Image 1 (tube, rainbow, N blue to C red):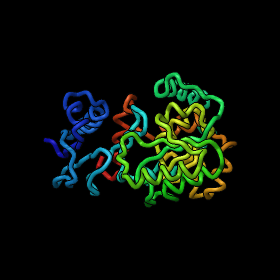
Image 2: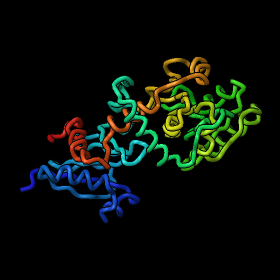
Image 3: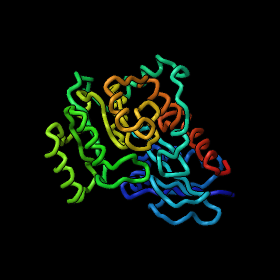
Length: 295
């Protein structure tokens, strides 16, 4: 007799491939709990809490409930997290301490080499020519996780006098007011322009500035310094405005160095679930147990 049941809630884009068995992480989740005698099913996304006695996993966001957890890709496939909260900066990894000396140098070197070839094929670091500013949404609004508004961030970087190229998020729908504010900044600062492809601009970036865009992870892959104006889970080796202040963080950026290979190995291989690993089911069950489930 099945004692417990799990429903994995997916948006339309993920649900059909998962039902066809083509979503590897969903397959690994189902295998992880079915090995314990649980029943596992797939269902459309919902904000409703799970029925009495059952458990639920939601992609990206879902109800706050002791029997509901969130799963989210950790920037690159096949790495994932299963967490209680949707906000990355509130995850345990954000509070964890990164100690480079504890990470095998050669394993990290091989890992970042493979990841760079997979995610950034053909891109190699080039002589610094500009500062890349990766924008997200709501340019004139300061949200709870941000040290300044994105517009204020842009102005601060432009004030350095360096050549600055800002890129817009391809999936954001910017308001007329935000676009007007951006245009006014570009008119006020001749060194500030708008670019298109963040990844294409990365190799020649002296450093990258963002609130908490995933472009910063690509910057780590190319060993580029990062200045963060917002909270995020991958803050450990960045220059954080919340800690240093705007002026100090930007002043340090050109000469900032970090152990990018060891960090990415630690952050992805040791802190996330590797859905391509033989240990994936055990990692999934451990994450569920940390989330308070009776695993």
